[in-house]
Image (cartoon, rainbow, N blue to C red; front, side, top):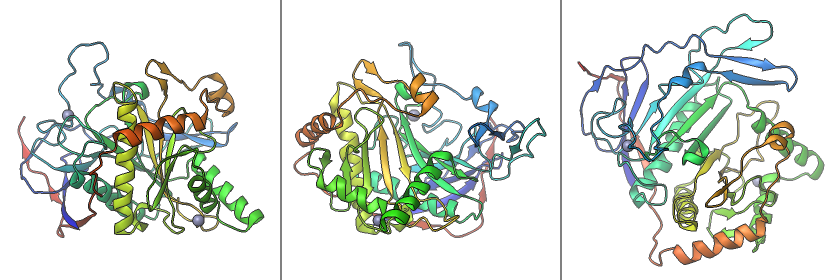
Length: 389
Ligand SMILES: [Zn+2]
Ligand SMILES: [Zn+2]
């Protein structure tokens, strides 16, 4: 078991910064914006009975993914960048361009319902190295990332106003990732987003009508399907789902009933999760000549609301848009207008392709990554030392 120390700092503009791993020391420059986001708010769309987050400031965020063959501008996530000028192992900071804030401004009075954009937006830096992926991090680095996700989730859940926590990653230009440095994000929501609400309702309906857990049913079906399995894992199913929206979609789902959120996982399950993530991303990396773009979402049970959300199994779900190196599925009119996804691939054929790549590329000596325990350094939050720039 590795122990990873966590140190908590504060940027001059008030944003929290958590540095995980060895304390290399160093000061933060005062380059941040003023931390004021007066335009942020939620608007209610009456026709769909759902909230839309209005976040115009995000339009000013940087784009460093090279898209036309020219050199990308300097990476803001590398050591020496504005977020972390000093050496670090891994870190989490509050997003400079948030859509949701812990102390959101009062929403404007408009012609229809508005609400404060309550929540949090964090960036998770997996490593200070500029290149790499969940497949190429060392076993210790990967264990640390899993531990950081659980650590941050625990903190975010402790705020009673938070309804849902989503850890995620956008990788590759095909999905609009603006930075190529290995990193993910965490959003904590002050309200239950519509697709999560849909899942809660489906699980509750299933419990009412069938009398058992929908998550357990899905796990059993995925475990029983040799045609959809990608790799085997003692604690998680790793499979192309029965009804995927996207080509090469893969879900990693906790087998144990009760493993609803990251902090619920045992140490052994965390090791198996790290192994499963590595297997899936390695497989994606080897399918084509270049790493496959994907969206990755860690689906954790939302806060128990109208009833307990007991029938939820923690999952990591990958949505790659490519069905071939040069063929990208876009969310087009039918998908956007109706929610009916049209998948141009056969899920069992996709699974057999992925299974074949996974079997061919898995190193024979691949050992299980360790588990890591976070040790929070107790003490007041340290205000970052400000150096002139
Ligand atoms: Zn970088
Ligand atoms: Zn269950």
